[in-house]
Length: 130
Image (cartoon, rainbow, N blue to C red):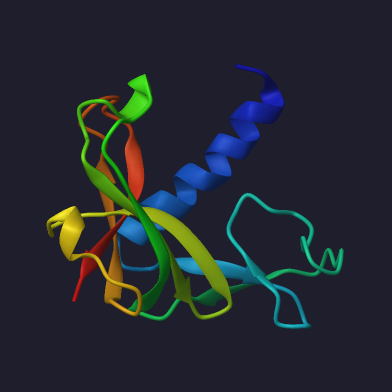
């Protein structure tokens, strides 16, 4: 792993730790554009003045897809639903957990739940329906 990859992973791993502790946050510029670590520059306007802001406790599913035939990296997890949920100024992509993938709906209220991929054993972003 290169130093650049280590730095990027470290920032994201720190975010995963914070989310597991119920302290998830976004990085936000003065214009209100949000992103997740390890960003150093706002992807919308290029600002380097980013501030940590707490994420709302819940988000809403904006779109989703159900995967029945996954890549080898997620073969033990299938079938699963992957969703994009709005949490304040950021849209976060994660796997919907704790519910049958066929029951996932647009507009569903979810909360962040850091979970572990059954295939890789790595931590992944999950959404638990509320």
